[in-house]
Amino acid sequence: MSRVNADRELNDIPELPESVSHSILFELPREIRDRIYSFCLAAHDGLAVEWPKEKRKSGRQPQLLRVCKIIRDEAAPMLYTLNKLSFSHPSDANMFVRALSAPNFARFISLLELQIRATDNRLWMPYLTSTDDKRSLKADFPSVRTLCIRYKSNRWIHTLPPESNMRPWSEDIRLLEIMDGLRNVFRLADYAAIPPPPPPPPPQVHHGRLGPDGTPLGGIIGERDFLDYIDEKEDRKRQTSYGRVPSSLATRQPPPVIKITVSCRVHQNHFTALVTSADALRAQGSRPAPNGQTPTGPAEDAEHPMGAVREGDEFRGFTPVDLRRRMKGVDDPYVGAASLASTPFANNKGVLLALEIYCSESRRENPHQN
Image (cartoon, rainbow, N blue to C red; front, side, top):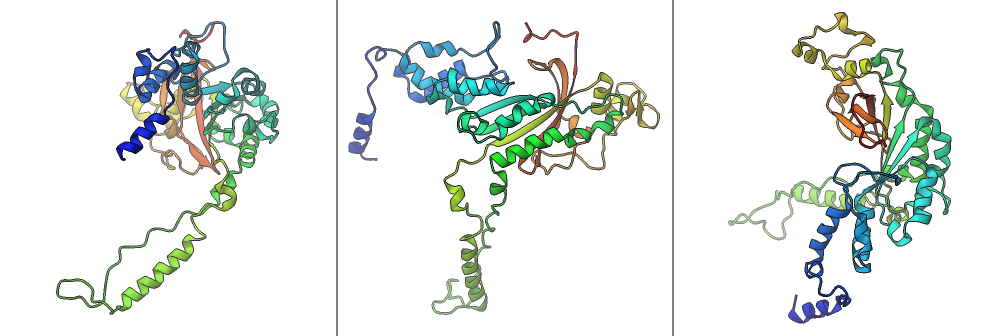
């Protein structure tokens, strides 16, 4: 870049108001200021931003936005972009965007979490599947890039063996309605139908006559060269129709990544039976029950015939093996203090689906409960 062009670009940068022109903060480059804002405004504990409570522990300092208008204009978009907003009622989500947040900042919301109980399915469905400009998920959050739904299922039957509960949750008609509704409103099938581009052509190898220095002789085309030329023309024709986004989709906002976690509360015995392998029981000095039985039913061996599911695999169901790789203790504002195990996300026709089981730990104090 020439010195003249560089000076012109510097002159295009607006000067800071007199009120902040002598501030040490604004002597720093914008990238450094953004980094400072992120430490104050972004979540570092992995918890979503919930509806305000009288008392709530949080590492965020949104009062920074009240210092001055310049800081508010620079930092406010980061508050909405870097944090996951969580709502447990459709009216809360709608009212937050329409009444509580500034419209010019609400459009920056890119991470969204919805807490949906199975019994509230009828309450949520009109909001999730509507295309109304005044009250709908798609209209309220047009820039959302990742939509996380925690679906609290009631399909876990505690009187059945734990292994018998590994499939009924995925056949819940209300869960299927939510997934179908989201597929339709975001038109996931349109994007899934776009075929991948053809593979790149193989390296071109010359099979004609070569000169003394190893370069092809001009004017002479070998048989393989001619066939490669024809193949290349056919590849160009295919590229005009395959692997190219249709014009009807080119100007449309790409759909968000939709991740649904089906959360099931289970008994301690079920939790232990599903997440503990026979080998682990032996290592702990416990004798596995005869014939793989637990007090509540059959336990699963560490090696399952289906094998472990990997992130993004096509959904065919989960097994206890998938739960054993992601276990932790949590102090969650929705489930309280609990032991939790979850599976990877599997692709169910464009919707990423995972299973989560948890059992409450009444002896642990939940710091999020007042």
